[in-house]
Amino acid sequence: MLTDAQIDAIAAELAEADSAHSVIPRITARFPDATVDDSYRIQGRWRDTQLAGGRTLVGRKIGLTSKAMQQATGITEPDYGVMFDDTVYRSGAEIPVDHFSNVRIEVELAFVLKTPLEGPECTLDDALAAIDYAVPALEVLNSHIELEGRTIVDTISDNAAYGAMVLGDVHKRPDEIDLRWVPGLLSRNGEIEETGVAAGVLGHPATGVAWLANKFHQHGARLEAGEIILAGSFTRPMWVSRGDDVLCDYGPMGTISCRFV
Image 1 (cartoon, rainbow, N blue to C red):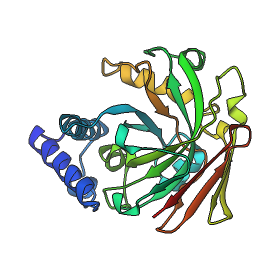
Image 2: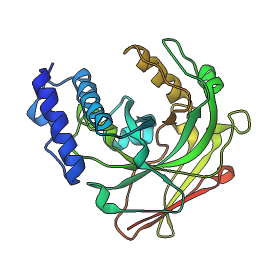
Image 3: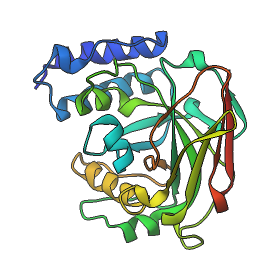
Image 4: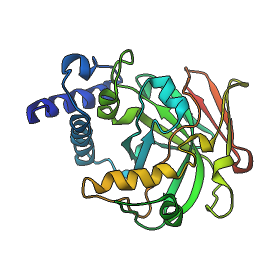
């Protein structure tokens, strides 16, 4: 395991890269023995410095929950990170490219909890009972660590590559719609680039919420009422650049649009 001093130093590097919108060398290239536990310690240290600096936590993101994303990254287990209030956009937003080191888009569903959710044996039914509503969401990926050769340790350390999210306007309770069959047609500048269906996320997009509650229990924590849980992508990531118009059609759950400027 990495020492506390090494954890502090890497977290400080990531904080600086976040501020400068830059990329640092892979952690695993410099510390090949770093573990997944080390990566969550790095992420936690970075998170705490952000909270101390005045940012407000609004939820959690779950990543790498679909075969499409696991194949795209070569990483075979889910991960999670934190989301702050200043990273949330509404549909129709203009999003500055300069706020990120690099920009990719994923198609997801987000869930807002009405009650706390706690493991260790949380099931899909438990998660559905705790969810107030589902809302379509686009995740903006933003990596502060070089992409080539990256491992799960690098990704988790980098707050699971979370950059921002764009929320739609249609809210659905879990009993109003079969969430497994929510579609996603992702377009860039009028051309469809990626398609998928929400069941691609662990068979049901809310399964990731239960997984996260059980994971948190291992650290003596729980998911709280009011938190937004971004459940993981059911498409591969799509690269975007300045000037790109992005539109995603979620069928019965409406559309999300945004423009990168």
